Length: 418
Ligand code: SAJ
Image (cartoon, rainbow, N blue to C red; front, top):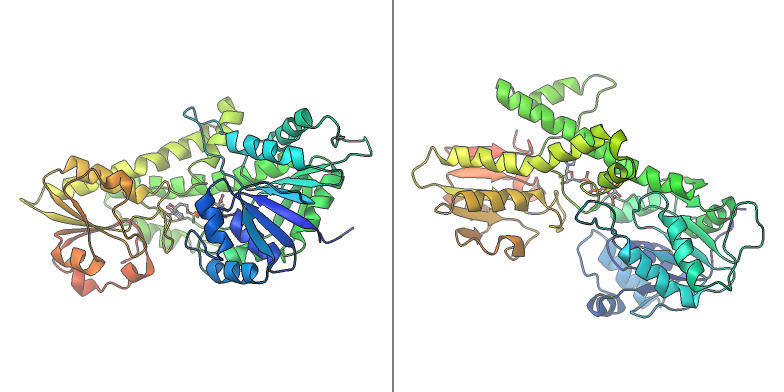
């Protein structure tokens, strides 16, 4: 009980979760091999560099590589434990695309030996850890799979969902409570030995399907609560009431904590994960589905408001501040801000649109087809604009003085300039 893993560990997927997890283990003495299909990612990690921005990650990666504890390769090596941290996007019908998970399982299968642990970290629908076991079992009939009540299994399988918040990954990786769901209790216990190496938060042992579902539920909970705020914003707009003031007042109630309305919900997790629940129980999830739809409609609604404001001018210039999916990160995946800009630029082809974001240095490919759109420094964009739209509350934007915005139409979708 409470053993600590001290073998060799391979992590498949050197992305937003795999790489910080690799570093957390490597800097505490575990020999970690990072595996990725992308040779550029492997080359970057091998040089001790990080292919994306996340506070404090770069220094930790270069330290772990310099210590010789973290290496990277495109080939799946032999190891004592494997963590799968590859993407699980959704298909056109919004069911989970498990092809990356399946490929990872198939890559691991030929390397497995008796005593190995396989952990799935990728966010997955209930039953996926069981599927990983079956994919591996089909390729390795020589190894005994873990089945409840049957002793003597050669392998352990568990789901341990990541729960870190982009922008705070290095802190939350260590401090968050960790759910470890095993296909059997022994699987959970053995997988927990890996996370005990670095986790200071509580480690909660459970079964694999509960762990899979808990992760989806966490993000659906947030999505539903953001949808509530976004719906309030629509209602307040129609009733000419200031939604931010209403929320500020309501939140002084001891049991009320309303989130912030905004231009939509982005990132790789919250707009995706609730659909996995809807797909698993379609007739039973109207609230979760509706919340998704409310949040998905937000960018279009925000863009329409801007278009209406622009109609009041003869030849306006519009500044859109912020392109990333949320504040103070450089990640533009599933960014509602980009969707808003795309709508505005398309709806107002003769209007000059200036876009600015301290974390984005080129016009994102999704926007490159608009000839009326230009990337600018935020101050210049604001100074030249008739209409200023705040889409992401990056710290440098919050610092823009109110006097600079004087005489302009200001649409603050984040309530940051109140
Ligand atoms: N947002 C709002 N209003 C709010 C809060 C957020 O509009 O009040 C928007 C953000 O601007 C952004 C989106 O929602 O576009 C999501 O941002 P976020 O900060 O809520 O979450 P993520 O996607 O960065 O990370 C989430 C986290 N999940 C929860 O908080 C329940 C994180 O802990 C998970 O590990 C992560 O998803 C994941 O990987 O699943």
